Length: 210
Image (cartoon, rainbow, N blue to C red; front, side):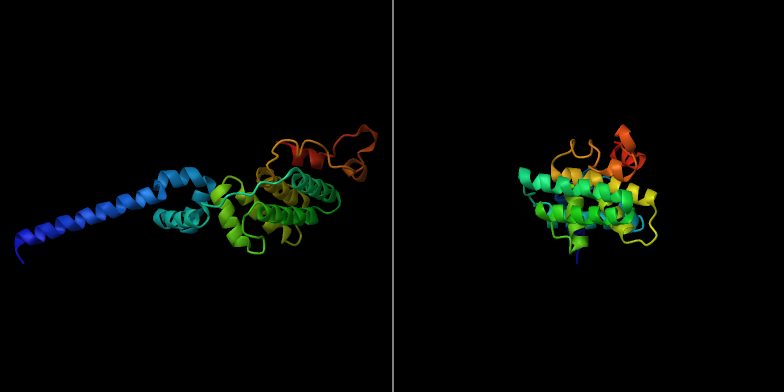
C-alpha cells in the first residue's frame, strides 16, 4: 500500500471520528445542555459512575430518549382537590405518626405521578427515571420520602425533612404551587394541643415554611 493511500485513509478516519463526535454532541445537546437540564441529577449520575462524565452523560441521554417525549396529562379541578385533601390528611397524620405520614406522602406522589402520565409507582425506578427528565430539581425529594418511609425507627425530624422534600415535587405535579401548604391542616391544632390560640403547631410551621 502506497504512502499516499495510507495518508488518505488516515484523513478519512480522522474525519469520521470528528463527525461522530459532532453528531454525538448534537444528539445529546452537549454535556452543558445535559447539566443544565438535569441540574442536581447530573451530579448524582456522575457520582454514580465514579466520576466518569461520559458514562453519566450516556445514561442521561438514554433517559431523555426514553422519556423526553412524555406529555403530562392535565388534572381537572376535581382531581386536584382530591390530591390536596389527601395531602392535608397526611399532614394531620404527621402529628400522631410521622413515619406513617411520610409513607402516605410517598404513596401520594407515586399515584399523582401515575395520574399525570408517568410510569406507575409499582415500577418505582422507571417512574423516578421519567420524573428525573421532567422534574429533575425535585425528584430526589421523592427518593428521600421513599427511603424514610421504609426505615424503622425514623424520628420526627427525619420524617419532617422527608415530607418537606417530597412536597416540592408534589406541588409541581399537582400544578397548584401556592395554595397547598399555606393553611394549617384541619384538626391538627386540636390534636397537637394548640388550644384557643389557633396557632399552627411548631412542627407544622416548619413543614409549611418555604
